Image (cartoon, rainbow, N blue to C red):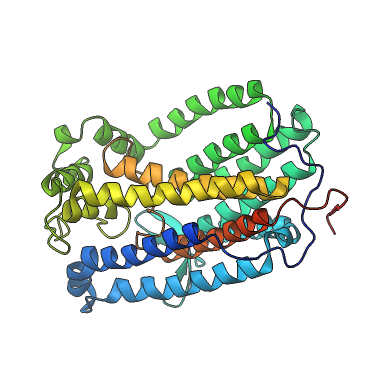
Length: 391
């Protein structure tokens, strides 16, 4: 397979390449953010009041994260995606360093049996979220530089397996199987788009599947999650409790839902109602109509992201836009699949909607990059004689 864009240029060197924003993408993201704040409050108010004495506790924290994320969105948009090449390898190294530090006792913070956070006072940051964006930027820049050699095993496939292997080992050490799976799928998609030989991708996937099964079978809690996925009702009051409550939450919503704020399962019945399982609260309170409308908004974001990738003025822009869009799409697909019982339980948030500061901030950073690539694409392709090399 040949790369999706046959362009001889690497990057647009024009510093003013970021013109007007994509209004459809921007409006869709803002609508998701506003909806997310409403649903975080609706699904967490009673829980927050019981645990902290402040019904607005989670909403306040989410709003602060939203402001930080929007600030990074604007900075990324104004900075220009073409300048990301200077940060591709530093970001990659920073992400690896943070993933190592999170495993160090006294630095990493443990919760729920996992060490995934680094805390600064009352502020917590999850390095895995930054690692996803850094991984996409690294892949995009490296694949752009090697665009004539991506079909070679030694240059266009093996190095990416090794780099992703480092990330996966560090993520599994936390443990964070969900993010490791997302990065693996993302790697295969980006290599496919770049033109890597399908035989390499298929062979790697065939090797990865038994390894994934081994990781699941060798872990008691992962096997429990798999059993709960296969038959949640047989384990209704133990390992299948969360997914059973999620399915009942959806079922009680019907076509139009019980009404905003009127959901019952968030009242200490459904764990993580404001984080990983917030889509269940949407289904219960707004019904199938609200759930479909929410998925439609995500579809618009993904459509505009793919559109930005196809219209990008250079290969780097194409790969970055595609990678970031796939990152958002995978999170949506996996989260919705888990909540509706189509996939085993994974600790992945619903982008823009679930409570989670690190996820929200890094996703808005990705949107800022997408907006700039979209704006650059509207101005037409870069001059073919322009070349940019690593400084």
